[in-house]
Amino acid sequence: MQVPDGLDAEGRLKHRTARPDDALPSPYSGPEAALAANQGVVPPDLSRILKVYPGGPDRLYGLLSGYAPQAERQKGRGFFNPYAIGHFTAMPPPLHGNEVKYADGTVPDVQAEARDVTTFLAWVSAPHQDQRRRLGVGAGLYLCFLAVLFALLNRRIWSDVRK
Image (cartoon, rainbow, N blue to C red; front, top):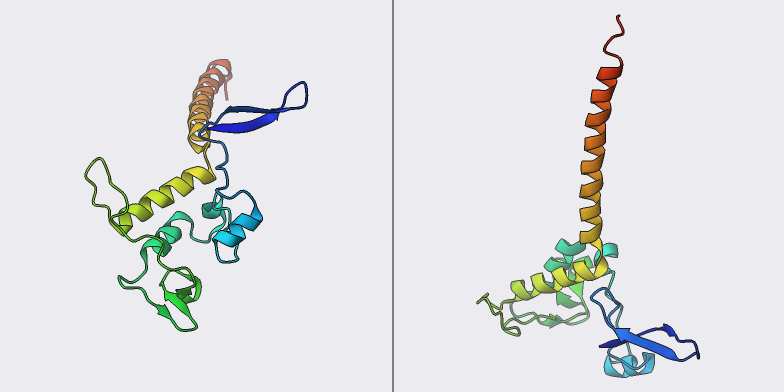
């Protein structure tokens, strides 16, 4: 997939090969197409949903997998879901199970699909988190080494001073 990457010397748009940390492109050509495809509502950008949603990944997993087995719309209230605000939501169950084939033989139920969606959204909301964590561990080990070194130097420098 090619993504826009600024302008070249003549002012034309350059493209480059997409990387995993690039933003996902919209499936719609514009807001009008999104409105037409979704019954008059533009769908939200979910790339940061786990950062701003109260409860984070656990609550979103509960919301996706918390519908009753035969969830029916209750007149005037929506669909019952114990993890939704007010225990009702206008969103019908988005996952139905048996929609994904797992190569390792995992049973494709709603819980497995919800776990996959939640894990993907957690990665999308912080794609560089693994690199930051590795850098933090390296910095912590470096600071521990410096602390031990300074403690040894402190003992050596002040060892001949009498109390």
